[in-house]
Length: 252
Image (cartoon, rainbow, N blue to C red; front, side):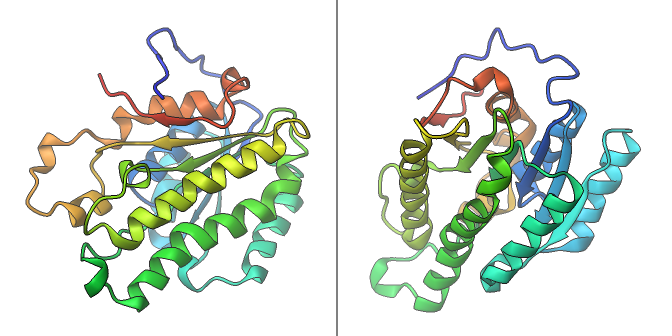
């Protein structure tokens, strides 16, 4: 599915009063989303593994005089249920509710055939791309329920729609992401104001993309900022009628 955003011209206060958590906020699309959401008035919670990288995003947001964000570090691969309870407690204590959740953190793993794929890498990819997404979303649902129009965005991929040789655990994890989105959207459709969708960002410049296609000319790939308009739209109240959709970024 594609959403036509040609007539979407966001106002400066589009996200004012919103509290939004972004996982993988230290780089790529997550970093761009955090900065953009803050630019339009949101109080952001920056979630990721490397504190130094999160602090750089924090400093940039502060330098631009956007609302001050929170930083919370977590190693998704080795995280435990208690870690997600701590995240819930921190947000509950600071804000009392959550208006948006962008599940963005992912790793590629290995591009190998199934017959050659190592189980340790398989397990790492599933821990970060699937298990942590489930645990983070589940733990934050009570805070999202406190919002009038909360939005959950999952990060999908082309490889999560059509299985491709040598994409291994990454492809399987993105199929799982699509399934989780659809199940949660269906469960909440008639019982909650929370809306759930997924975004396929297609090809954008990122560490994951560089690892997947090392010979690719990086200048030939769009930047994260080129696809961020869809994220801004879906996290805002303007998309409150959009539920259970898998949406492809359209870069013009």
